[in-house]
Length: 280
Image 1 (cartoon, helix red, strand yellow):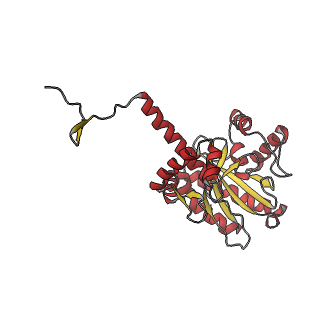
Image 2: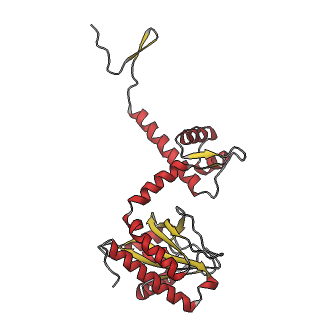
């Protein structure tokens, strides 16, 4: 009697054999996953979503392929299409996954009480950033009640060289890691105040280490100032950057130093809570 392959099933009056998983099939599956993730990341980085043709152009894929992948992501709840504008946007499941990541970060849970206290003391919005591939990503925020306030959407990516939190993290990294970040991203000018020469940037990081906090003096956005300090692990390496952002008019030079001391103290308290090494 002939042996029936495991996994075979009867369809109508014939025997359907299971598809053999070849290296080519696995390669196609991985390629589809990579493309779907690239689409998801592109939609997440956009401000308000993108149309199908824009997405296809951005990721460099045919519109038919992009539509098929988007439909799959839509069925899983990761993206949705606005019925009126036909714009593709991030949906709730992507938030669920992102929130799960945030909940596993002890630094966020430990920092939240200090963030709330810092917001109350300074009267300004407080943000928490982590480093990712040479940039910083906002993972937490406590908004102030000011009518005019600096709001950074959690999940947004910012260049490190022109941000307070980015410079606070870089100042406590080894020189070779700082060099790696600058080699990858450079020092592009964002505003007239952005530090764009290696010497000016190196001197600024030295000042950050000396005073214990970093300052973004309208280097990332005109009219916005930011003060930030690092949260360190048990080895003295930065795991996050804690920052206060406000319109420049509410952070003049004198108050900038006062808020800087507040931020540094809050970051050191958060560092102690996660068992980190205090700033020398």
